[in-house]
Length: 331
Image 1 (cartoon, one colour):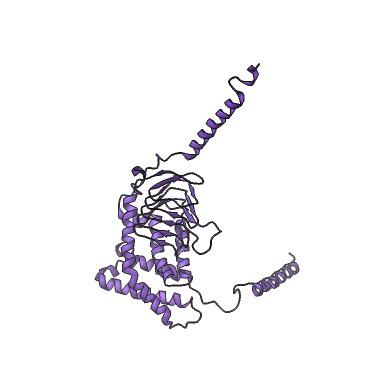
Image 2: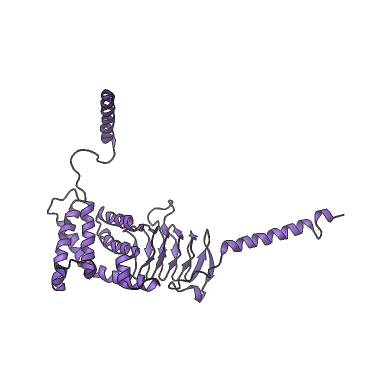
């Protein structure tokens, strides 16, 4: 064994690593950074689950307490933990940061509202999925419901200008479910995610009430816009599996976007759009308006229609070129 060579390699690599630390544009070495702890943030999420849906996630012994006492106790725990983690995002604050304390208090005040929104989301996910046998099943096993739960918590902190923590929460949901909802998105009531894997919702997305997203949907940007970069969806909108809605486009109320479509322009209310790029194939047709109509089998096949049109056009051109007789029959 050539120990001398090993030592030379290690020292050379160590010198290069030290140089990289110094050149880096982010802190890489030295005193420990003040930043939120990922495990502590996940604990806050779990405490919120225990508070909002106690019989499903709560501690059995604590559930023997009266509900008001149980709720107050958990709120105290959440307030203390959240204040600590928010303080760590504020280098200018000491351990007794009044700003962090006030933000945590505002968050606690909003928890009943968050709970009411989540109960509506739970109803939408149960009623919208014919494979769901109970709300309990949805709450305990559906990845879409879990991602929505974390979004509602993270969004409240985002609205209070909390740094880092909302994204840590949303990325935890992403890692657990494959669903990526930016905490900055604004999402209305009765939000339904079916299956969920691969869904992406960008930061400046706005979603109305009673909206349904299926697996693989992207509500994303084009990379060309600044500020408002993502779509706005009205009420009662259905976006089919694998569809992409890109850029700051507006999707009107009661719109249906067929599976696999790519939407790059505004869609009026009551429209059905399919294809790549998506084209409007129906407007004002009662059959296609309700977003709770899950049957997408009757959507027109725009690609097949185009192929048929091109074949018909080609036949006409060939007939015009050949005349009444094929070339080999002409005199």
